[in-house]
Length: 128
Image 1 (cartoon, one colour):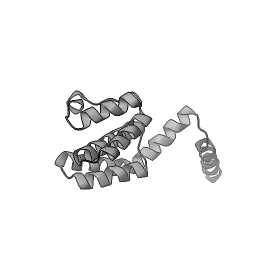
Image 2 (cartoon, rainbow, N blue to C red):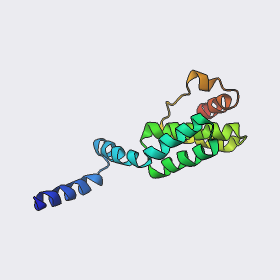
Image 3 (tube, rainbow, N blue to C red):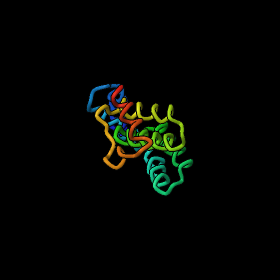
Image 4 (cartoon, rainbow, N blue to C red):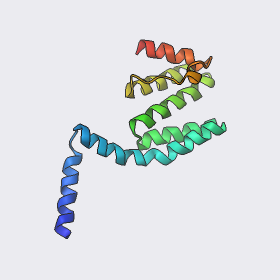
């Protein structure tokens, strides 16, 4: 039993060093769990209008590790927060980060029509 556990641990560690698609997917499953709580909290705070705390939690979630779709969402919401706070450079930077993760990313129709971040996103995406 102990030998089987040791062999499994060594095999998992060796596979963890692989950069193949399936191994990246498995690693992402484990990594995404790390930042999930902060991500969920950050989105709730965003919805509740607690923008300063939302930004802290979304950034913490990114620092801890998220899956690709959650990364895109976190960067997008951070961009929104920067845009409405008049920090256009940071807004653009967050949109660029989201597009680096998913170049096909787009805003929902209601988001795209926003008078502040809609035009900024379109400009960033056009230049990406």
